[in-house]
Image 1 (cartoon, rainbow over the protein chains, first blue to last red):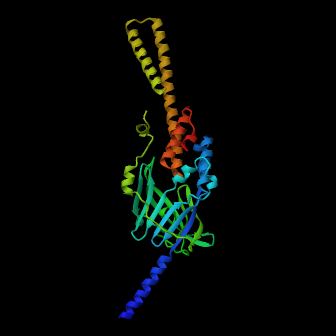
Image 2 (cartoon, rainbow over the protein chains, first blue to last red; image 1 turned 30 degrees about the vertical axis):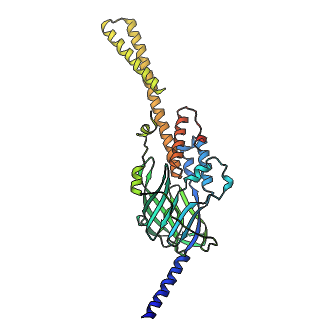
Image 3 (cartoon, chains in turn blue, brown; image 1 turned 135 degrees about the vertical axis):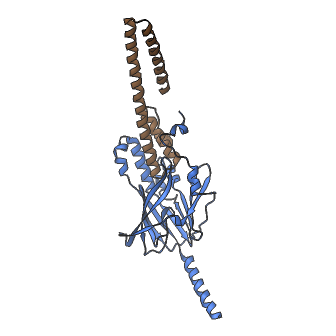
Length: 246
Length: 102
């Protein structure tokens, strides 16, 4: 009987060690689809096209880290990268546009940090995202990745509640069920994720970091995604005068 | 400007209505001439107002296109709103600068 418990304890401790070893840092970068800027509706305003192109250049040159340790992960922009562009006009606006995402797979909750007059922790369940894994494959670097798709609900400032298509390319060879922007739950690391005009891609994978990875839950006022969507106004062409006045 | 034009249009319309009443009582050729003159002005003003509405509507479209684009690339609501407002101001002929948004 004692021997049985000893064997069980051995396996539990071994699996705990395995869990505690699952820490690391994945570095992602962004690639913005600029083809829209060449379309008829935009190209007349050359000044704005130039500004947007410059902003996208800044956005696409910074690292976005995905730190994970056990069941917790944090996705955030690394403000130290590409400080050479910090004098670019709009640099601060770009940097502040990156949201912090916190995920805890033990509690099955994910949090997006939204800052306005105060800091909101907008929470939802990890199970809200339901993936459809397809048979389509793609090689990213040396890894064979599979395509998965999902649809998510989001609140758009001018369009209200919208449904967005999300495409993820995940790699079963890297058994980490995480990805950018709190996406995860796939049987492998998301190497590439497409959400509208933005594509996140992996720049570096570090599974044996020689630095500490401490992940703390962000601080702020907890609010459910549903309530947050309800609080956010929708500005349309019809009601804009109510907001800006006549 | 929009309000001034609107008030002007109302005033002219008022003049026209008043003149019209006069026509019914004293039908004089010179009055009819004046009515026609005023009537043309009213039509012109109405057309200007219509054109102005069209410009405002198309500028609103431009403003929203840019605001949506800024939001789609992940910029904050504040920056996107500011860029949209600036695009609208520039489109309607006001002086404004996108640089003020950053």
